Length: 458
Image 1: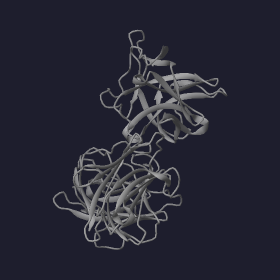
Image 2: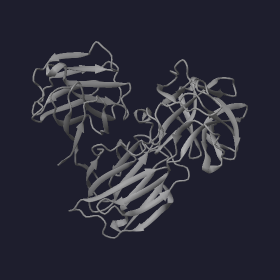
Image 3: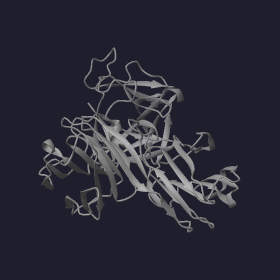
Image 4: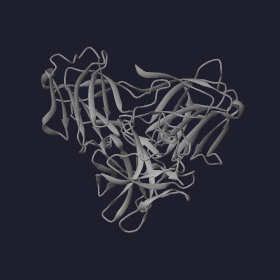
């Protein structure tokens, strides 16, 4: 049977997202009007985006919209299509740029549009508004088989965890990768391998394995076994899905961003899988392995969003940079994010190779970190931003808005700005280099670049 998750959406027009691995989603919704579905590349309400609005305008019509711009691509009359007292079933499909929606039990869509410039869809969001709240029952793909071929089937992984059930005689293989392909770097978890006698964690398909655990009789061809794989800040854990106990654990000293998972079977085994792609009602994902801009629009927990960071020596406006060293946090220092441990990260900058580069101050480490040349560089002497605005706005690529807070300059004299992204459970500050179209952050010994980020405004 398929996975079904019940989700409640308040009257606030804010999407709740979950990843999808197929080209369609089926759902039932109970709402008086305005059931909105978003199709996006990532788990955030940002462009590019398709929106299918069912029962809008007082439950009288439905539309398809791209990138929140008007005129709508398609508009049709659908009086009474929704009902606040009963569930109504629908499906949404996307294939080769054709986006369509239809009623449950009907193969012909009631609304459809062909996009001449389509984009890949990895997430679906649902919301209600305009006076309506809703209850949704969302159905993902049904259980599926993996043949005895040792070929991974890939899907997006955005929640920092993967929950699944597997039924097969042995050799349940799961990989975690930075893309939808079998490429390095990658983690592999082999459960019930070697004729169902042991399980391992492997890095980049190399031996010796990082973890080896005797697991005789772990798998059963007649019974589903449930597992949970979690990753955060380089820590990889495999749990028993029924007890929650940790079966295997390994910490990667050089973690990489995980965006996809793959599953396969082999060595004489075929498997049946049930993979849970949903976030529980009201639960946010752990830190996604790729930046999730929507989660960054507010300041980190415990810090007032949008409130100005004012020091005793500066009364607002454009902040000032103060010299510091050895992990010192200057009074009034601006909090830009938080580490995956929950420790606040302050906005800092330091000189390196003739450049002045924005980064992060981790007080407990006794230094600031800046990104440069593909690596994370620790600096015992640095400058901390004190006072000024704590207003962050979402940005994509090189579209740095006027009024962005300057943070330094590259070795070539290019202005650098202060940006931040969510990554592996952290909200990490770094440098925005407009000519590169990305925000670079120092993380796990590396310089990582993200085209979707937030920039600090002056």
